Each structure stands twice: as structure tokens, then as C-alpha cells.
Length: 258
Image (cartoon, rainbow, N blue to C red; front, side):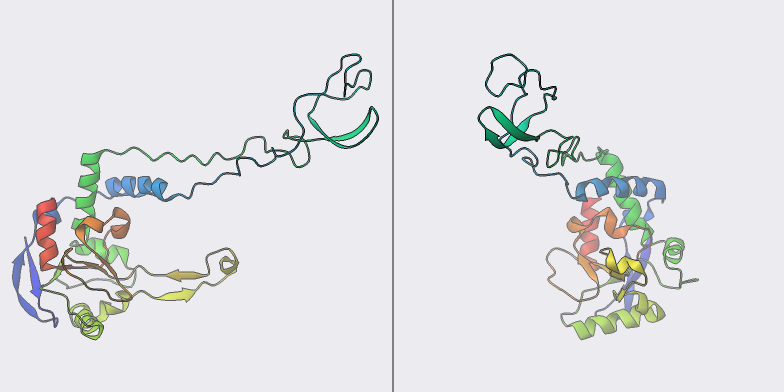
């Protein structure tokens, strides 16, 4: 399988042989399975404070035996733990504490803060990762992901010889390769319409372009995601068909990994 190789200015240089990973048959259900499984590893553990509702002087139960200190023989009150507010001799004014049915007491069944990761198969995960990479070279999946695209004549996957060092040169590279699709390449953030602004979802943004470089290449540009093959996750490539640019060195690393 071959694709076009572009130089750092965005001009087509030659054809290049791409790794067999891009020929993997696409099964979206397998990728979705591991995308959902990865959510469990990013969940914020939530629980109440360990000592919440248990920091009172109340302890034990109220005794109903005769002639016992603090005993409530014949008083007809429950054996709920109580804290003393005041006393006069052997007369006590106390209120229930500690237990879940009292004011300021502990919760009956608080969240424990325990999150178990979903078990996954290693060979299946590797296969799902290969499928997600192959979808970046599939024109049907790219058109399916972006609603503003009806068709594309881009040679996929997009491979560049190397990335320019300056941001201005990098953005001109994107414009020359992607053409009208370059508007989808840069991440844009806008204020959400509606009540979601008051519920922690003030901004919404698009994913933008994914640039896969080798670990030896040191570049950083605003508005795009730049990752090496070892940093890639399935969540970076899902939904399938994300616009992706590969460097020539990163393809060699992908060939070794697969």
C-alpha cells in the first residue's frame, strides 16, 4: 500500500510505502469496546471523608439497667448513641449522634471511592489500536466523521517528510496539503449556548488535527494535538476517521510496533 510523501513546504515529493497496519480491516465495534473501557481509568474517585459524622463524644448504647451511672432505667428512650449537652446531677440532656438516622451523623451508605478498571484482552487491544490507525487512512471513515465533508480527494494517510520548526511554516504546510479542509485542522473553542455554561461546560471545542511524530522530533504548535506513537491512545483516534498527519520517522516506529 502506497501514499504520497510531502516535503516540509507541502509539495508532493514522491510516493512512499506505508506499513501494513493501515491495511487492517475496520471493525468499529472492537474500537468502541476499548474506548468505553478506557473511561474507567479516567474516572475521578469520589467518597466522603472517612471520619465524617463520627467525630462526636457519643459512643456505645444507653444502658437500661437499674442503679447504673448514666442509666435510663424506666425512661423509655431508645438505645441510640447520644452526646451530652448538659447535665444536672443524674439528669442528662443529650441528643442522638454518630448513627445515620441522627442529625450530623454519618451517612448510611456513603460512596467508598473504589473504582475497578474494566479488564481487557491485550491482543484485542492491540488489534483495536491497529483498526483505529487504519481508519485514519480510510476516506469513507474520514467523510463519515466530519459532517461538513461530502467527499475528499486527499491521498490518505497524509505523510510529511519532516515538520517545520516555525509555527508559521507549519500552518502554511497544513493549508497547502489540506486545502479547504484546513478549517477543520485547527482547534476552535467557543462559548456554549444554553444553561450548560453554569454546569461546568462553558466551552465546547473541536478535536482538530492529530500530528503523529517520532519521539526524536521536538515540535510544539498551538491548535493541534502532537503525539508520538508510544503516547497515542484509542481516545485520540475515536470516533474513527480523524484527520491525521504522520511524519516519515513516525511510520518507521509504527512499523516496528506493529
